[in-house]
Image 1 (cartoon, one colour):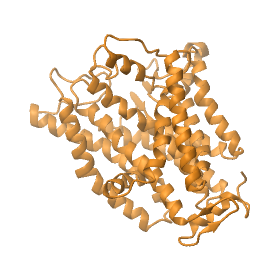
Image 2 (tube, helix red, strand yellow; image 1 turned 60 degrees about the vertical axis):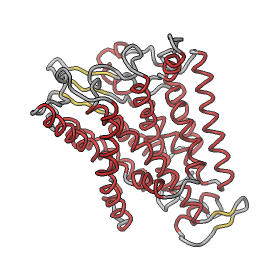
Image 3 (cartoon, one colour; image 1 turned 135 degrees about the vertical axis):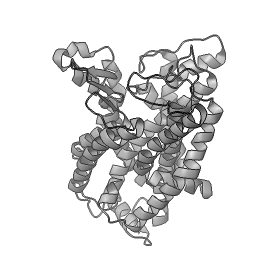
Image 4 (cartoon, helix red, strand yellow; image 1 turned 180 degrees about the horizontal axis):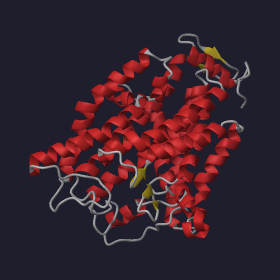
Length: 423
């Protein structure tokens, strides 16, 4: 696809639709209306809002659960089914978040952006996100900004670097870009046996690209990479290519998305059953059928394996056609979060941290919750899952929703604001 759209292309028809609030556009293949375009975009915002709300559950668990800093909630030797599933359901968040960021980039072309404009936006927003990860997000987790000893980078970092990559990749033909993304997703597990030691002095770079873990300097400084970049760049590129499907006529689009999502999910099941390829953690029969199911679902997130991404993106894509039909107050509730995802993300971490401190003062009489490196909570610290869920619901519904609704209104009233587009 070139930087401008030919007047007789199907994509240009969708551009006209999204730029005109009333006029239907007829092509040789289909009739598209602005109502249909809005339904399509609302479904994307609704899905993004769903995963953003679910994401807050995982971070609430990090701050409040009694075992959060003591063991991995997916460790079948220590976890419970309820704790495992509380963690597992949040696995959908990062893949869908990054995938839909790519989709949104593609759809911005149908809102009037040229490719050079989109490339510049992706470049500058990518740099901005990396800066936010190192400052605002860091402060939310630790309530300090001492970057001299320890840096910890997660999904916003990966999102930023993926946007930097996409800024260049969008100049490829759409089919080539989509194929690049799918290849990175499907093929990166071939590199699982390649360790940082294979690259000598450049081993640190391989950690940034594909192997989760700390990069340590002899001075004592540690850079902890939670989200290696290779698969996430692939997820965003695939999401960009996926955006083209959302421009199809409604009936055709829904049919394709449902089949694609269910097909990806079926591929996950078949590959996982064989333990042949796609995840370095094979499943195994456990003492109970439920534990066996949990073992089957326990795929690697850091970095996200092929099976992890099939397991999460497949159902999410299949859900999109159903979300197009979901209306009413609850749908609008989730759409609100989906329209201001970065604003919501930047608020929810310091809010949960502050609530954890307040709870600690109330229970222990002093501030005992800290996420500093190598720090462990005192014996007996934390709460059960009931408290975790109550805090999650209270923080999201009572505190974050009004703020998100307000900011969504600000963005709606100032659509042409450049700086607001970076939030």
